[in-house]
Image (cartoon, rainbow, N blue to C red; front, side, top):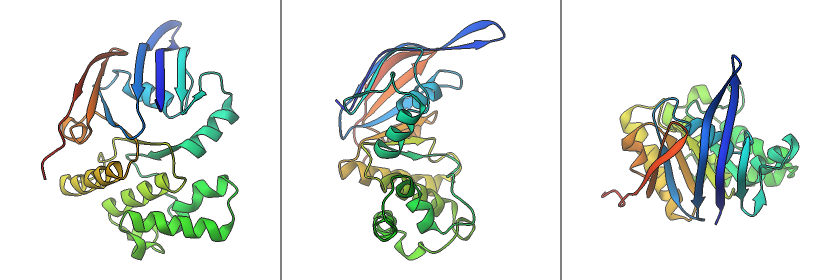
Length: 230
């Protein structure tokens, strides 16, 4: 298994009260799976995403990613795992406005200490893999919303991560462009990438092969999804 999460609890203190954002969540994800985590606002799905993405650690429980126990890591250990094993795609793209697309895609490799020439080569290959090789020297404000999200996907891919984690990846896109981005995720999955989508949108979730519904900090149910026709 790529992901083994068992009895994850996340408790926040708010105004002297304990809030159970996650309440005993257990989840396994195999390499090459395409999973959607769905739930209404306040359900715990963002908290679960933060734990899966090593942006936070659980109050209790075990989380093993690619054979490494995450719950015991300090901030530096979490940063190392995020950089090497997880590619993030966010709703708001999170691109540097003054940098070229190519430089934005290179950034995760800078933190890995890879040489300049190799960085450019790998970043260009990632840009080409999302169909944007010809836009490599354009800055974000010279790109459409869909193109910006493709740059963000290329940045997620450039480190060859174990896991691509996408948070509402079509949230800032019109429906036509959103479908194009979901088609891109479909092709990445077909190439063997492990993808987890976090969304409140049923239409987006149905692009995955398995949907986990979360409510009140617990997994309410799971369902399998047949591949979408066309």
